[in-house]
Every structure is written in structure tokens, then in C-alpha cells.
Length: 396
Image (cartoon, rainbow, N blue to C red; front, side):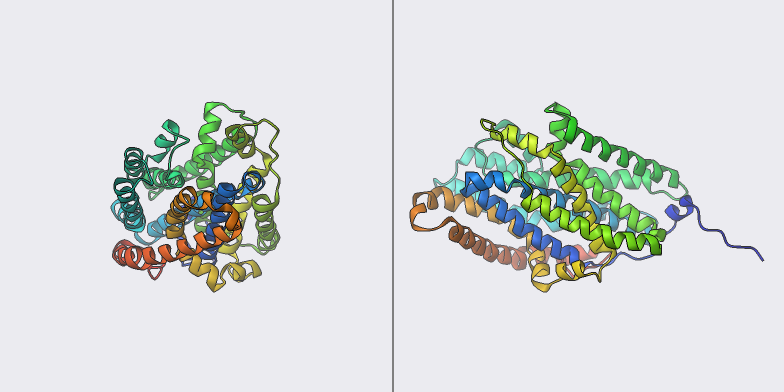
């Protein structure tokens, strides 16, 4: 009788994933908590110079979203490969377009109308911003006009869209082909080297142009998520009892660590340091780099241990519901805040505490995000399901 040998790494990489990818509610909850932190960071930075520095760590929440995007997109691509043995790039881009473009175009359309028919925004610059955001080249606007832009927060959507354009094609063309697991190993090895180099550049690269590119475009955060997805999806036999015990400890440490580096860690600002120089130093600090690693461990923990206390915390229904609104909230909260702050609140600061103002703007943002969700996003999501491999009940 022949003894069965454990499958080789190559065989595991060539075979379908052992556990089908499913909807993970805690990840929606992380989105919900994350968008609240982003809103807190934007509002506090816009209303208080002290809090702008003190709460700088909330910038890590953007990296958390990048890690989450890398993880989810790669997981979905690997699931499609497992089920069909191929990846449809056409369907992938249609799914992304239906998920992102309708709500974005609504925001851009409203913004352009405000600029054209009121004096609240400069028409020429606003139209340029809208075109750049629609084409996902918004960082070019930041480079050319860094102090006058209105839709600054849309730079993150451009970064993610570039990732969506490049990574699936690389994974499908190079990494995922039957009998070519060595290519996937090469891709994975290259990504590991890449994120290590990015981390070294952040911490020790100074203010050189390559370091500034890493700080600006955050490719390491996206690829931390991609590597995590490959690890969890393609190597399911990592779940040994010993490793499971280690993960039970390391995961919560990552969660607590992320919350610390995001909310409580101090990013010192030396006297006389310009805003740009302070950001360069803070982004290049060990605090920030460790925070990105902790964000990765957070996502690993809730996706691998969905019945843990932390996973149940992030699965709390209010967090999940806010997570479903996170895209609309991200699109609308900053423009609403800037318009009302610049054209009304700065003249009435003595009559309303800034905290009350921030809460009111947050509530208005929720109302607008709800309208965007049910009038624009959900109809598009119904069309999106025709092109999906994994169906998430139109909630993603």
C-alpha cells in the first residue's frame, strides 16, 4: 500500500483553494470603524492646528484601507482562479467600474455644478480636479497645485485604481497559470523583497525622490494585503495547531498595536518644522511602519479567526452598516466639511464649539452617503453581480 505524501508547494499553488472565499462581516466592520477614524482625522486637522499634529497617526487608517483592498482584491482573483482556472480581466474591470464610478461621478458632477453656478469654488481649477479624479490621475493635480485643491482626498482612489489596473494583470499573466507555480513563487518572492525595501526606504531613505514616491503612493501597504491573501488562500495548511495558537496571540497584539499607533502614539514635531517636512518625518518613523504591519495583522486575525472576541467586536451590526456606507462617506464628508467650514463656520467659531460643528457635519455626511448608497450605488451593485464569481448580497 502506497503512503500518501504531502503535496508539494508547487502542487498546492497549482490546485484550487481548499476553503472557498466567503463574505467576512468583520472586514466590513473594520471599514466602518476606519471611516469614522478618517473623518475624525480630517475634521480635527481642519479645525485645530494642535490636533492636526497630535492625531497625525490617524493617517495610518488610509494604509489600513490599502491593506484591506490588497487583501480583498487578491482573494477574489484567487477565488476566480480556483473556480474557473482563469481570470476574466474584462469582468474584473467591469466590477470595479460599477462599484466605484457611479458614486464618484455623482460627487464630481455636483462639485462642478457648484463651481459653475456659485462663487463657492474656483470654476477652472475645480473642473481640472474633476477631470483628473475621473481619469484617476489626481496626484498630478496635487503636484502642480498643492495648496489650492478642493478634492484632495480623492488621491487615494487614484492610487487604488492604479493597483487595480496593474496587479490583476500581473497576477493573471505571470503568476497564475496551470503548471507554472514557480512563476507565482517568483511573484510572491518579489513582493516580499519589494515591501521590505519600501519599509527600509520609509525609515532610512531620507527625503530622496524614491522615498517620497513610496510615502505618496503607499505600494507596500497594498502589497502587504496581497501577500496576506496569497498566504491565506493558497497555503491553507498553515493552520496547524501550533500556528493557530501563535495567531491567537499575535492577532490581538496587532489590533492593539494598530489602535496605539493610529490614535495614541506621538509623532513629534520639532519647532520650526514645515508641514511638509513634518509629514515626511512622521511617515518615515518606526511608529508608522510598525502601524502598517499591525494593520496587516489586524486583517489577518479577523479573516482567519472569525469567531474571536475581536472579530465579534468588528461584526457588531452598527460597525458593519457604517462599513457599507464607507465609500459614500469617504467621498462626501471632506467636500461638505470644506464648503461649510470655509464659507460659514470660520466666521461663527465663537458661537459653536468645533466638536459640535464636526458632529453636525458628520451627520450631514451620513445623510448624503445614505442617499448615494440607495439611489446610486445599490442599483449599480445589482448590475455588478452579473460579473462576479463570489456574490456578497450586493453589500460590498
